[in-house]
Structure formats: structure tokens, C-alpha cells
Length: 79
Image 1 (spheres, helix red, strand yellow):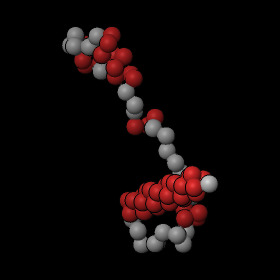
Image 2 (image 1 turned 90 degrees about the vertical axis):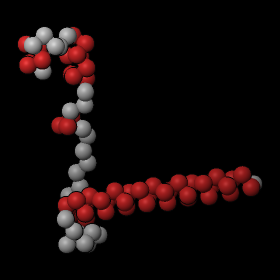
Image 3 (image 1 turned 135 degrees about the horizontal axis):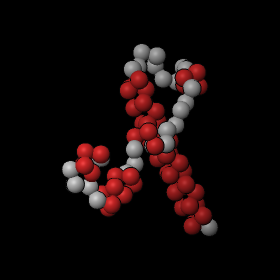
């Protein structure tokens, strides 16, 4: 940003655009202690495999809840 400003390539709009971008260290993160996952994820999995496993599990549970809610809504409509 400093180099662009010095070279005259950066104006107020450019600064505002850069400052409004989401930075990597500003993203919200979820932290799960490993002891809570012990026995639920194979110990041989790498960190990336553990991450993928958790995301797939959450996706699966989300679909399960949606199907369950749809089932309840269908039962209500039948009445």
C-alpha cells in the first residue's frame, strides 16, 4: 500500500477498498479441543483429514436436521 501511494497509484477510494477487505487474521474461527474429538476421529488422520472429517460430519448432520424438519412439517400438513 505504501509503495502504491508513493508511486501516486493510490487514492482515497483505493485505500478505503484495501482497508475494507477481510484479512486472514480477522476471520472467525472455531476451536475444538482435541480431547473432545478423541475416539471420534481416527488417530492416524492428518490435521487436514481431521478438518475434512469434521466438515463432512457437520454437513451430514445439517442434512439430517433438514430432513427431520421436513418430515415434521409434512406431518403437520396432514392434520
